[in-house]
Length: 196
Image (cartoon, rainbow, N blue to C red; front, side, top):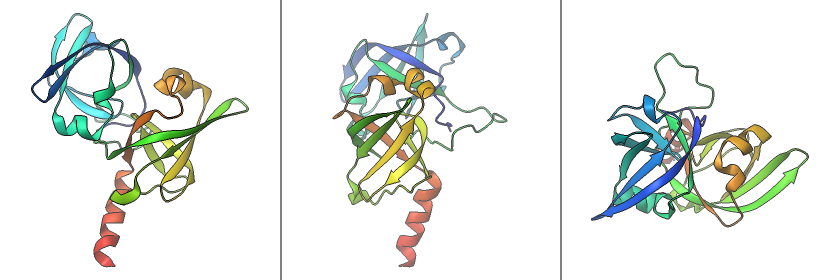
């Protein structure tokens, strides 16, 4: 389980394909504190540490993960939002994040607004995922509050700290991002399907 509060930005140092799997090596400030079998969210995708070598660690993404997320578009030298799994007793500063990406979205607009930024995203709503204003959404692993919500789009406001300390400062219009919808909202939506 995660909170959507990014600890650090990592750098992709190696990408190796093996059959349908992708081995990803990352350099991160907390690598020395990692253990094999530990979970780390990479742009919101929970992956297991399989090896550690100095200041680099390796994780593996399977085909299903690559098909449903943006991990297949990673490049060597690229940046990635990182968060280690939550420890029992930690404060839940963001919201409950599972590290299971529901789908991707496209950044359709970026607007600077007096010291903050408004990012708008469009997504395929055929899977019945929904957002609500003032509800939670996870974008590339970052816990955020929805400020505008439509059937197939939503917007979030990014403060300067989040802009600087996550990969939001690298995000451009037309870029694809990972989305994890609020887990409580997903259960409520599923229950209403059965009751209607």
